[in-house]
Image (cartoon, rainbow, N blue to C red; front, side, top):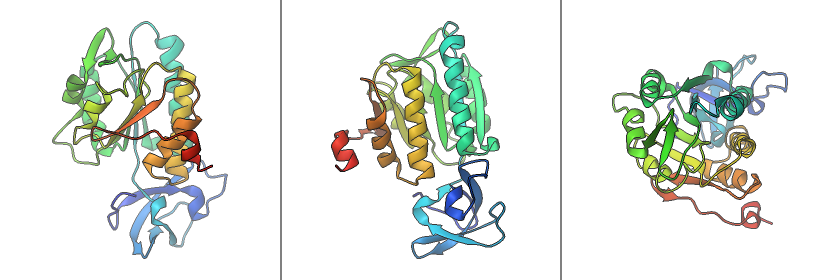
Amino acid sequence: MADLIEGSRVHVPAKSVGLGSDYPSAMVECKYLRKNGKKGVLSDIPRIQDTKEIDLWLISPKLGFFILQIGDFSSEIELLEPLHSAITDLTKLVLMPEFVWKYRVRSLEEFRFLWKQKAGAVSHLVLIGHGDKSNLLFGNDKVSAKDFLGAFAIQETQGQAPVIISLCCNSGNGLFGKNVSASPSCKTFIGPSGSIHVSNAALFYQSYLSHNLIDGRDKEKAYQLSRVFTPGVTEFNMWNKTRLATKPSRKDVLGH
């Protein structure tokens, strides 16, 4: 759970405040009033007139997802577009559409322009495209971690450092993901260590959002659970300020 500011807007699981399955998203935006022991007091909850108290670990600072398709001219229709649409639709089941922004670019300059407009409101940046051991592919250009950070790390932008979830092949290795994670502008970098099929990438993403946001698990536990349940040889890596999260066995993660 991040530090919460009294009077700030937050997101909580809809079920935690008594909203039923007919509510259109799994997370609901409301107002954080104050801490009461191990509980947080909430108000301004849709469909609910009274205040509610829920466990603090279920409360997230206001969420915003920037979902970016990075085009390569050759595989957009067959691979990138379907994954982009699937990831966006999955996210809109978790959050109301006004907190989900979907963009397509083919150049680093396009990303720089769009990111500067939205960065301060973004809690999660999702990257959909192609990569190799050292770069992401923007159109026909290979973009290194250093060049990516030149567009991403905007010093004048105020707001929380986002979690980056990359679904680009190889981007979670030590040459790209580790270096991006070192930036103060990146809270955590999660990405595949090698090549991964789009269907497995989508499965990991859905699992991570469910465990982290809807069930309220911390990001490392959500990562471990999603990692062991995603099929395929390639595993996702999690980098926290250049520190690679350990990868315990499935038995150790599940506790049996």
